[in-house]
Length: 186
Image 1 (cartoon, rainbow, N blue to C red):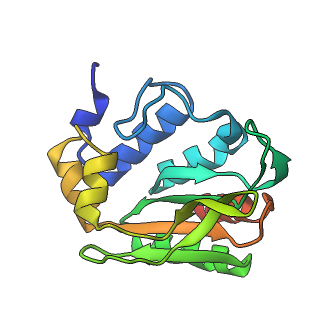
Image 2: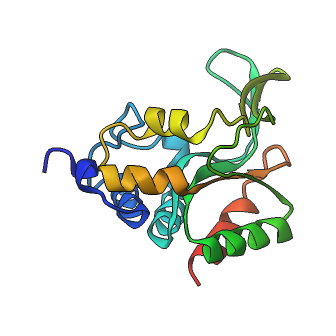
Image 3: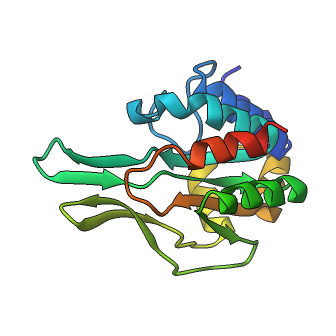
C-alpha cells in the first residue's frame, strides 16, 4: 500500500500506523522527514508505540539528556518530553493524573485554542534551542503534521485534545516514560 495514512479513518487508525512506523513496519509518516525515529529516541519506542496503540498518538518526543558536549562543541541538555493527540477523555485524565503524580508538567490545547506558553526543552550553553507549549491552533498544526491522511481521521484530529508532557528537571529520563507506560497499559 503506497500511502496507508490516506486510508486512516480514526485516531485509533493513526495510532496503529504511528506505532507501526515507530517499530519500522512502515517507512514514513506524513509529518516527519525521515524513515525512522531519531537515534536518541530508540529506547523510547516501546513506550511510544504502546501509547499510540492505546489512543495517545504521539508526534514528537525526546529523552532527557544530562549536559553533554555536542557536535558543535557546546554543552547541550534536554528535558524529557512528548506531545501528541488524544480523543479518549478517560485515557487523557488517566495520563494527566499519572504524569502529575511524577511531577510532570501537563499542557493541553482544545480545538480553537491558541497559546504563547513556552517551556524550554533543549538548551545549548544555556541558550534555548527548542521549546514546547506554544500552540498555533489545531488546523495549522494538523496541516503541518498530517498531510495526506484520510478525511475522517483529519476530522477526528480537529476535535482531539493536543497533549504535551514535560519533565521539568533537566536531564532526567526516568519519570515521564514510566508514568506514560503505566497510564497507557491499563
